[in-house]
Image (cartoon, rainbow, N blue to C red; front, side, top):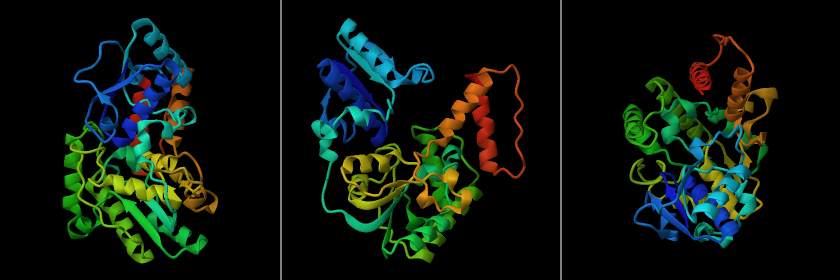
Length: 339
């Protein structure tokens, strides 16, 4: 048996069961799920309690030494030895999409192919990403983004799919930011470093001004929740998932959710994964930068390698560096040193 322990988060759950599907295809073993109840768990056989077997956690795997294929082989060897395994962790390996056909799994329930809209859709994950330091590194200038789209495309309608409650923000932005912080402290990422209110409010105001200036359509969304649903998404987040699937042109960054919607769509849409790290380079608009947007992971690898080959090192941070980036680098270096 392959027992998958589901955590919080729709995207996390998809990767967890995709990894189990890959192992099931290779071993012929059945899949059972335990953990958080979600839209995903309804598609699989559930176990009342974890099935006895070797526990395999990708959080304890050293990814610098243990690649995707190595982990798969470890799981298969454990299945041959014990007959069952218990998977804990996110197993967020992008290679899974080249190994598993989504339409041959129960996940096909989320595949809603249909007519693709000519509307340009932008997916903005903002709730916890508005108040958490690590997500603030992926902030981009909304005015620059929307100005570039208007100049480069003749389509008159731009639609913003977002989990952020803009109507509530216009009424009392400080109250909304405080509420988001409170939900973060009680949610699955309660250890995250939170930003000062001033930075959160200024960035939210930048989006509000840009939306009004450029005439962006923001479909009405329902109030958000962190603990009761999936990863802080809207209560009707699957409607957003299907809307993103129906986009001929989809602009996204900093969100596994929109990437998964794109992968599930089966379309040849001109999806653009925006890299905020290239926003100001060479005068390019962010819409032109097609990049996985995982530069922070690359920086982390470089730091790990650099520290591992030297006896001492000196980190110099210039004053012109944005406060958010300086703070993040200090936290990252401490993490590298303690690894």
